[in-house]
Amino acid sequence: TASLPRFASEPHKDPRAPTGNIRRMELVWPSREHLAGYVAALARGWSPDNARGKAAADEELARIVEDGERFLASLVDREAQGDPVALPDGSTVPRLPGYQRWMWDGEFCGSIGFRWQRGTEALPPHCLGHIGYAVVPWKQNRGCATSALRQLLPEARAEGLAYVEITTDPDNAASQRVIEANGGALVERFTKPPQFGSKPGLRYRIDLSTFA
Image 1: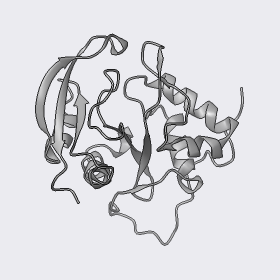
Image 2 (image 1 turned 30 degrees about the vertical axis):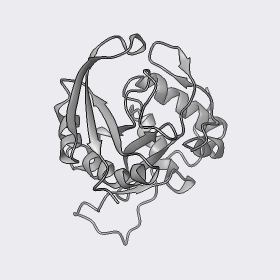
Image 3 (image 1 turned 60 degrees about the vertical axis):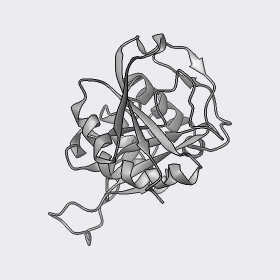
Image 4 (image 1 turned 30 degrees about the horizontal axis):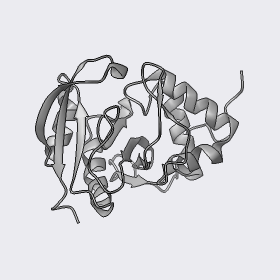
């Protein structure tokens, strides 16, 4: 099997960095500077795709080994020029305009993705919301997802959206709290499409009028 590239280790910690305190989490653009932390999280079993899990993580590791720069470029795709998107049942669908941001507090904390259709808030039936996020297990319960969503919402407003929709599972109380902390209101209990196993879901909506 191919070995991970040289940048696939945890980043060197600056000895001048403060210790004992949790640094403020910020959103950064995917870059070579932060790629080592991302690769390390994938290698530890974390996945940015809550629906596809390990399969998605393994695919990303393989893509990074093959061409790290190309992988990074693919994460910011406002024109939807990338490859089709794989769904949990193995089918593929056309990519939507979108991008990923990475959560960073001096270390990699997780990722948050945003996708949309130009000129409308509507999404295809297979797309379960405008925004999805995943925090690495060792950074959970620190408010990372809540902060990441709060930082991303003005960017969604800047794309001309009046609101965003986010879906989660009925038993995922942590994700529900993240959404509600950012003004999300439950608008629907629904059944996910067959590609996602026809499981129950919750659909929230966040009004973007207050996010400049």
